[in-house]
Image (cartoon, rainbow, N blue to C red; front, side, top):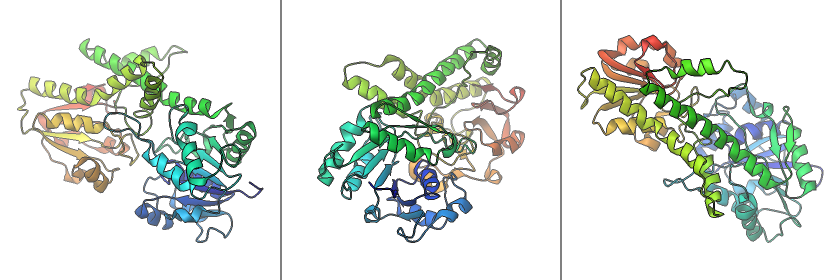
Length: 430
């Protein structure tokens, strides 16, 4: 490969852009994304995901990929032809039946394969099941390049650990797992990441181990959240405040602190299905993993149903009532709406023929309309003054500034999914 590292990062989303910016501070980097609108925004120094500050992005941008260290952003696959390291950070979603969708990964591998040269290294960061890099991606690289794996080119895997919206645990401050298709390549991949990751690296013994480590990180969180979600349902029947129980239990030194809520996004709500799918393929029916997914996917409908029950007890007429859902993004203080489970609350309310308003100052109205067919309210000035129910689904800091008394009816029900408000000011919380 030679001493000079020329890197291409494929996919400039929440994962790829921060990584490309960090590498660009030390290396010549091409940032490739097929979304032309995204490319234009980034070239103008604008990151709508809010993961990279405008000044930081502008500092590393270059207009010529051959002009030295810096980040050249493009939508043209031909611009990565001179690279010798390719880092793939495209999404790995699931379909409507929760089956893994490898289309973005396959397309990216095809594009890389067409420009792949002898001694090049392809590193995957996209979350997959153990074995997918070598079973799915490598054959595509070989077919499109005419080269032989582990003789002419090599592969690495370093799972992403980006936490969208988290300004404390940024890409360089999270320890990175690395791996390679040979021991020597593993060391090279590890050294590459070590040059920009200040938190350090962990070199896994194989690509499969690195893949498995990533997919169980989120599966573990999913199962633990499912457990406290089930507790929340039980304690609600027992008229016990779940938050108070967790605070009391948390006084023990080895109690693991998880809180109930909606589990969405492109990691925790998706990755367990990748592991489950692989387990099924090799003849094992994963019970705990899928039970956790079933519990967590039920929470949106549960919140809406419980809210309707409380409305009925207060004498509200359900049909044509006005309901406000606070938040549509998948987590607080973040614009990402992918796999948001707040939509489950909204869809369940719609089955009762209620009028649902959705207020979220972080989300893009265009994206929400495109993804969910909803007209989003982005300013509190546009809210009604007589909501029969208010459900806080996402704990954006802006919602602390809302005066709920000004927008609710006299008999309104307030369900605080995130326990953001004082207990005495709401009717229910998880």
